[in-house]
Length: 136
Length: 125
Image (cartoon, rainbow over all chains, first blue to last red):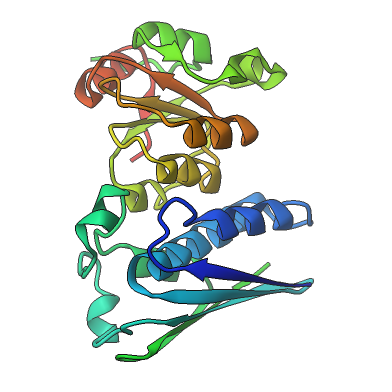
């Protein structure tokens, strides 16, 4: 099963809508509740990253009987130093992001913690691609 | 300090913090069934997303749509909004649709935490 969502950068009121939709869809399948929660958390953090940092992006979900793979691709400033971005507490978020309860440098570590595979690549000045996989 | 573990119903939680329910969810059948054993206090949603939140009440001073989305994502079904922060209609709609109760109170995060701790709700972390 495949699903595609568009994510608008800077739209904080819509941020998280795609992840909540995916969560309610995958809940209908026979996936352990803890896995559903982990997937939902990883997607939500990733979606909020696109909203917080990029101009626009897409989220492509590929749901298979034994795993889920989700690819986020955005157009935006990209990440200068991925290793640094992965550090807990490192953040380049704006005040607006922080007012929404994010931007404390925990998004990427949270995503990593909740998925089985995570591939992050970026071209500064162009955009970022994040691929995550959770095996059931 | 209390060591007893309490299973708490929503109405009792609301009474303890002298709050009011601000969506209509308390009239649904799930309302009387839900039991809470733990509480977590945070304004940082990424922190909330780090832990399993089953049977947990979230105490927060952050009243935005993302507070409710975080609740949906982490299976939280009760939010306590501190210091009478304004709860918007889109928050109420999303909460009701997602079967999440929102309690609003004049008390601060510190006071709410103390009251619920004293009455037996355990910390998540």
